[in-house]
Amino acid sequence: MSGGLVHFMNSRPLTVKLVGLVSLMVVGTVLGVSIAGRREAPVEIALSLNPSEGGVASIICGPGGMQVDRAAFVNGIMAHALDYDDVHPVMLGHPTAVIGPALLALGEAEASSGQD
View 1 (cartoon, rainbow, N blue to C red):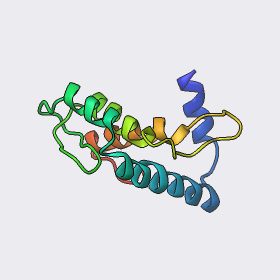
View 2 (cartoon, helix red, strand yellow; view 1 turned 180 degrees about the vertical axis):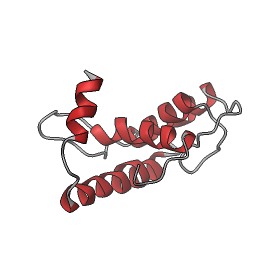
View 3 (cartoon, rainbow, N blue to C red; view 1 turned 120 degrees about the vertical axis):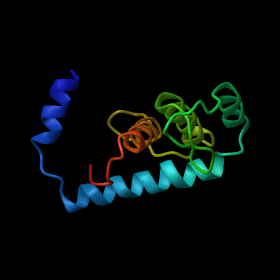
View 4 (cartoon, one colour; view 1 turned 180 degrees about the horizontal axis):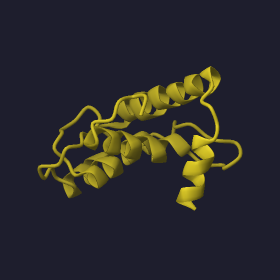
């Protein structure tokens, strides 16, 4: 499945409209909602269970040095803590709160550019 998804994504050009929409979702959910939810109890619990261990990924508005999977997990909880994250009408879910934190952690670990 993932190979097919990569092929599909690479076969379509990124339009200005799509890039703008994705940017809005990332800024709104991954940054805005995460910052607002950073002090919520689920985030504090996730941080206490996932200490920094010499990794290369960061927590939004928090410590760096976490393993990629742990940073993605904590940032994902932060993005969804207040339940103000975006909704996709077709999948009936919150795509950016799940995908955004994982991509940020992986992108940081791989030293990827925003365009990557």
